[in-house]
Length: 264
Image (cartoon, rainbow, N blue to C red; front, side):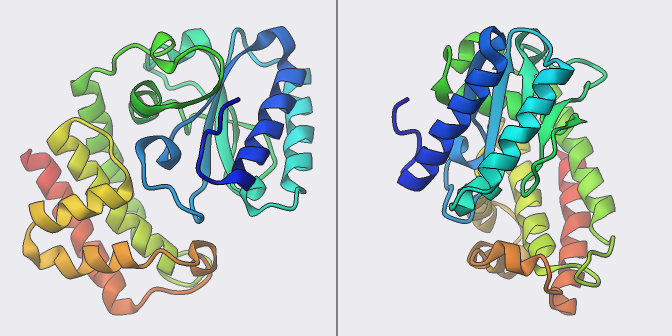
C-alpha cells in the first residue's frame, strides 16, 4: 500500500487495519478507502479517519464478530489515530447507487469498537466524496464502484440534513447546554452544506468556512471565523460548554442557513 496520508503513524495504523480486514473477509474483500476529510482535504492531527470497506457480498455474522474483535485490538494500539477510525462495511452492489430506504451497514463510530448496523455512510455525500476524491488503500479505483451522484439527489439530501442539524442544534449535550465542540461543528457543517448547494461539490469544512467568509452575509463573519480558529483540542471541547452568547448566535445562524437553502 502506498503512503495514503502525510502522517506516518496513521499510515502504520491503516496498514494494520487493511491487513486485518483482508484476513477476516478473505474472498469477500473488495477494497478499502478513505473518504471524509482525508479525501476531500484539510485533514489534520485532530481529524477522525473516515473509511469505507467494500465487500463483494454481505458481511456474515461471523465476520462481523471478527471485525469487532479486530477493532478492539486496533483501539489498543499506542496511537491516537487508532481510537478515531470511523466507517462502514458496504456490499459493492449497494454502494453503486443510493437505495431509497437507506439500509444500514456494519458501522464503527469514531471512538468506538462496536460494529453495529447503521445507515450513517449510506448517503449521497459519502458516495460523492468516495467517487471523486476517495483515497485507495486497497482494491479497484473508487470510480469503478460508484456511479456519478445525481445533482438533484445530492441537493435534496443536503437540504434535509440541514433541517435535521437545525432541529438538533438546541438539544443539550453532556457538557450542559451546547458544548464547544458542537457549536463549532454546527457552524462549519452549515457552511459546508451551503457551499455544496451553491457549487455542487463537497469540500472540506475549512474550505467551506473560508468560502462562507466571502459568500455569506457579513453579519456571520465573526461567528464563522471563530469556528475556523477553534480547532485545537476537539475531544476536550466535547466536555466544555460553549459561551452562551456564541451558542445563541449559532442557533440564529442555523435558521439563516435553513432560509438560505430554501431560497436557493
